[in-house]
Length: 229
Image 1 (tube, one colour):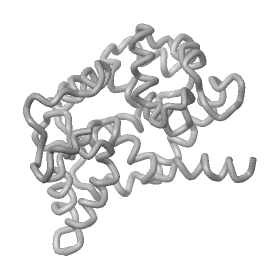
Image 2 (image 1 turned 135 degrees about the vertical axis):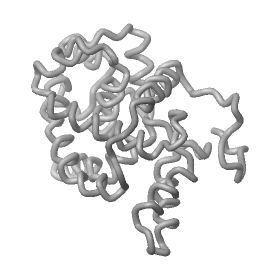
Image 3 (image 1 turned 180 degrees about the vertical axis):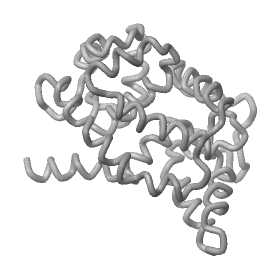
Image 4 (image 1 turned 90 degrees about the vertical axis):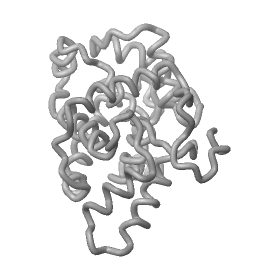
């Protein structure tokens, strides 16, 4: 998708997000970006990796709670029950859209890393403060703090506040951090390429989250468990 853009820095103005839920995600991110970010440099994010990693791994219990048939994946029906128990009031269409957006290998089963991305998108999309206490009831306040850090990180990277991170913005963020290191531009490009899955020169919050779960090693948990099985 979007491969025809060539080396042009950003897609045409009329470029459309893939799904309704992704359009909502971009709008929610733009609203959040108007409040600014507390992140001052890429280094501060890297220092938080261990804490973020630990917090996300604690989600495993929530994941297992909703994976009723214990097959290591959450299917659409299990996800509906999960939303109902967490009192997340999304329409059936929104739940379906979210599932499809996060089920990246289209196997109708959501792995642990995909589930984390989905929960974080729900956190971003829920502007409704009354939903927060509902989520906290099953012991998620720490997780919400972690999700806020991830949102904050994206806001820091997205300098022009359009809801997407471009290649230039990523290079700028990493160059500001590692001044004097000649390889910093290369690091930025590698990080960006890991994120930009559809190669359209822009990264939305979902793509950023999937890359982030890989950076902090969430995918490794699944591989370790599969090896033990």
